[in-house]
Length: 224
Image (cartoon, rainbow, N blue to C red; front, side, top):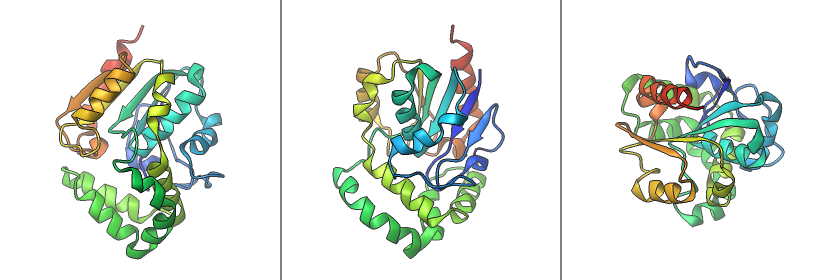
């Protein structure tokens, strides 16, 4: 089964490291041009040609939001959907109102270096923390601004009823984004989802990539 990996905001395909499949750049990241609009749906549509039939689509954080949008738009295309510490929506509603105005500013002042240091400080693996910061600092400010707008405006509750394919949801025990309330809501909306809580923070691919891949392999190997 083809495994397609989508990275988080400000990262790129290479930030996954070695994967048993293909890692794609999101619009405005790595070598891919920006999407026409800063929405999860526009990001998902830009990846249409790169996601083969019957793929397992694996998204981390922002990449998970885009994966959810893709799965809702093209449910017949996916064999499985895997979300890695992916919030359903921004934690506070007002974020969606102000992000379009704030994102273009903060990506320049204080800038990507400060953003990478602040966000990466929650990574519990020192090597992963350094890798995360390096990728963020190399990002495009405009691409990062688009990513923040997408993340701030995404409302996953609207698409959950359309996610009928097999689902694996990986959450970190110390994540600020996917706690008990999030898991309860997801379990109610998608009772078929396999929700696994890992002994990590919210940056699972950087905290413990081997354990993450082991859970993904377990899930995919059990599919009929």
